[in-house]
Length: 90
Image 1 (cartoon, rainbow, N blue to C red):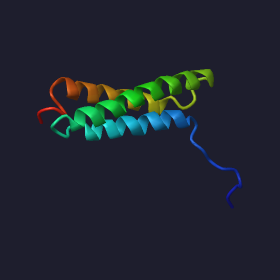
Image 2 (cartoon, rainbow, N blue to C red):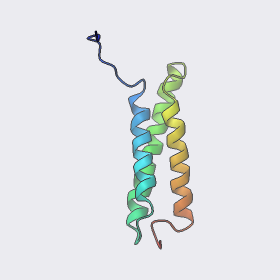
Image 3 (cartoon, one colour):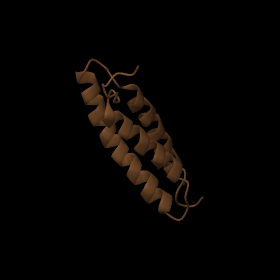
Image 4 (tube, one colour):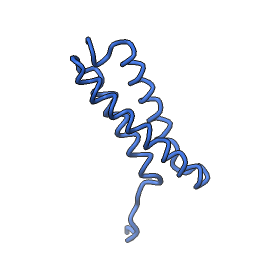
């Protein structure tokens, strides 16, 4: 029997940062500056959301920080890909 309590993510801002960062990583390789704008823009949004989620998670004794860690990895990969020409010339 299921409970009537709704199950929600422990840190929704962290999950938003995760999904934005993943979308930025996936869209970054599109050539002709499209990937630069889409992937780079989404990764910047993910970085801002990640900082907010990290502060919220630390205020709640570290609850829900794991998606922020993965988002940071995706953001680093996106920015690394852009720095070697991803989204511009691929």
